[in-house]
Image (cartoon, rainbow, N blue to C red):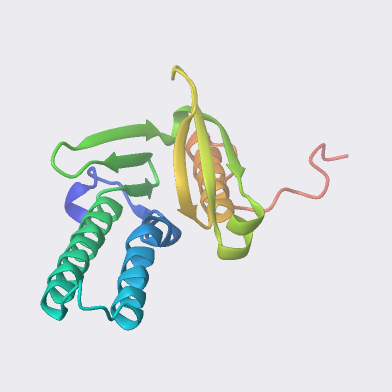
Length: 174
């Protein structure tokens, strides 16, 4: 959002974690719903009356629905923002945590992707900044290679290393 930007700062990218985070978190409730549907279809004895089956099914459906809401809120509560001046990592629903890494302090930006992550387009980005205690991790980031390249470009530009113009073919002038 523009109101979160500093004066003179330009938004480059704002992203949430990849949708695979939601899918992974929904495996259990979906399995529970499938189990309940199978029980509803195949379990026809008098010992478990129809009204009890309906109540149990509704309770399981309500639990799965609540789980979905919690997963969605947690997914929305993690945001990665890249501007021309900084990387901002925000997490939390009720208590909010925010970490800011100035672009000109970044020393290294590393990406890691599993085979599955490469197929679906997500991965892990580790950002090392001067004066920081270890790398800051951006997990399940969509298009981690593009993010890393943007950080590198912005970092070089902030340091004055890349002016955007192509380098001369013969820098020595001879």
